[in-house]
Length: 457
Image (cartoon, rainbow, N blue to C red):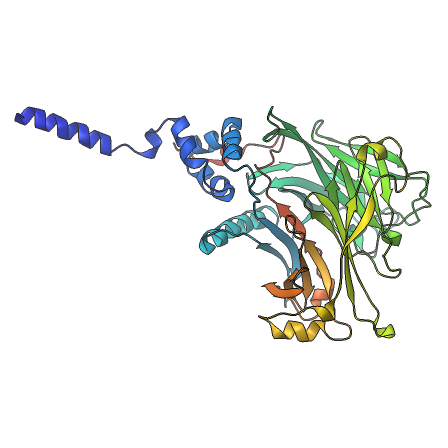
C-alpha cells in the first residue's frame, strides 16, 4: 500500500469515528431513545436539544414507545401540603418508583419537585386536584373587602410537570365564605382522550375543570356548577338537577380530593355517599353508602385501584372500648350509561367489601414503635391514599409518618417522614395522586415548552 492510499484510509477512519449521535437520522435516534424508561425520556432526554424535544413530541415516537413498553406500571407519586415547625406551608412529593437505580429515582423526583415549586409556590398558590398526570393549580387574587358579598378573583392553571406544559385559565370570581374559605368550594378536573387507531396512544385530549360553590343550606333539587372547557377556552355556568331519589345533601366538612371515574367527577357527601357529576353532559348521580358503613364516621379516603373506584373508613370508638377497624370497599357494576340516562340516585354500582381488619392485628418488623402504637386502644390513624396498581397496599398517616400498609400480610412500614410541627398530622391535607399514564397527557392550547429553549441543535 502506497503512502497516499494509507493517508486516505486514515482520513476515512477519522471521519467515521468523529460521528456523533446528532448525526444519526431520526429513525435511528428513535430506536435508541424509545427503549428507555418514561421518566428518563420525558424528564431528561427530551430537554437535551430542540431536535430531541421535537422528535420525542411526535405521535410517531409515542406510538413506538408504547409498542416497546406495552404493560409497564409506571411509578406514581403522592403530592400534599403540610405545615413545618415554623407554620410555613410546604409541598411534599413522594414516589413509589421501583427503579433499579435509587439515584435515578431520586433525580427524577427532584426534577418533578423543582418544577412544581417553581410553577406552584406553596405561599401563593396550591395544587387542588389531579387527573392522572394533570394537576390543577389555584392562585388567589384578593378583591377589595366586601362583607355583603364576599368574593375573590381566583386564577387556575393546568400543569403537566412531566411534559412541562402549563395552561393558564381565565380568572374566575368565586364566593368566599367563613370559616373555611376555599375549602368549601368543591373542585375537580377530568380528561377525555382521542386515540389513534390502535387505541394505545392519546394524540389529543379534552378536559373540564369543575367548581361547585358552597351553599349555606342543603342542596335539594339542584346545584350550580362552573365549568371550564378546553374545547372553548371559556367558563360556563350550569344548573344541575339532583337525582329524583336524592333527599338533599351536603358536602362533607373535610373535603377529600375529587376522583375522576368513567366520565364522572366524584365527591364525598353526607351519609357515606358519593356525588358524581358528568361535566360533559351536565348530569349527576349518587352512589349510596356501603352496607357496612358505620354511622358517625366519615369516609376517610377516595381513590382508584386497578381502575376501580375505592373508598375506606376507619371506625371504632374509645368510649365503647373498641379497637379501630379499617374497612375498604371497591365499587362494582357501575354503569355510567345508565346514570347518564337518568338512572337516579344509586343507579348502577354497589360497594363490595374487600378488606376488614383491626389495627391491633398489624405488626411492623422494622419499626417496633409502630406495632406498639397501633395496638393501643385508640391510635390516631388516617388513610391517605390507595396504591393504584396493588390492591393490597394502602398509605396511612401515623404520627407524622406516611406508612405503607400491606393488607394481605398485615404489616406496616414507614414510607417517609413528614417534617411538620407537633400534632399537625391531625390536620394534614389529603394528598393528590400523580399517576403516569402510558404517555404524558397533552394539554390542548398550551404554549409549547420548547418556546423557552435557547437556540440549540
